[in-house]
Image (cartoon, rainbow, N blue to C red; front, side, top):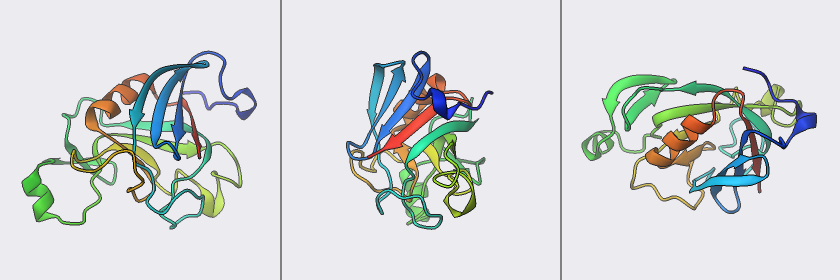
Length: 172
């Protein structure tokens, strides 16, 4: 995996992800063309860089790790590891208020030192992911704890298109 070079972003060729927090959408782009678009849910606390804020960080990132390949949709993750559970309404009822991380994880790393990388603004140390969420969670409105939530089927498409090293631009 090669770390993207900030001076060459957005890439003229190749796949990259654009996450628009105002529109609550994620676009898979190839160069300047949109290949697919999906509704998302970002931080209920808005956007921001600070650790512990519950906000979704902005700026250029890249996919640092892709976790969960081969797991069935609805797989529950804790600490980036499958728990052996599959999400169900009964499981949700047994664990009210749990922040569900389902199906796959794309773990982001910031590319901009002092803005989203390093110190108390480091996106990777903040555990900022693209991940699946229960089907009854709304898309198109900010409701997460800072991560980017997607429907399972949409996440699977993004996971397949965006291996580690893929550039990701989060903006409002």
